[in-house]
Length: 187
View 1 (cartoon, helix red, strand yellow):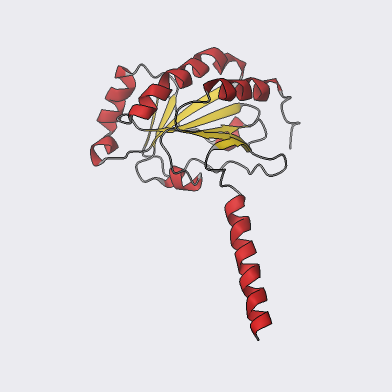
View 2: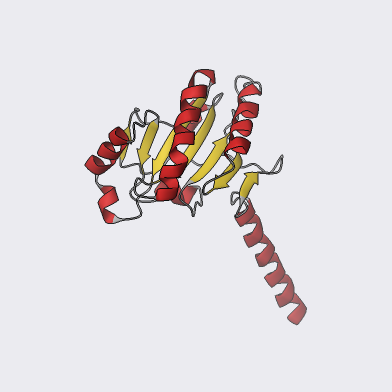
């Protein structure tokens, strides 16, 4: 009986570990191992889209997508924002789509008008999805502001970075992903 219980416990533990590994990136981020990159989850329950009509990740296959979780009162997000804006400006015509997922930390950050005002004040030109319910945050299993996820042309999350820093590494990954061939039609 003990052996059977131990085996069941081991199997349950392995299944739970596999479920976490299917998407969770390492705490420090970085490249995901080839073959281990999961399909990116869809944008979910977005309250409002700013600077863009609603976007669907499936419709963005063939492009590289940078998803940036941020909020307009986070100092780390504000320090990180110039790099995100620069990548958008430099690479949008080469196939990079930047989506800022504004996920509020405080109740007043849920106001659409406050988010619109922040977008204007900060001169953000890329798409911003307002994720007041944390649905997209949860689907990415995100835990940080700021957090960057890079999605390749096949729609897989292949890189992440949490917090400030690693700007050169992230830009090099953007460049490498943009240089990859587009997926074959129907794949």
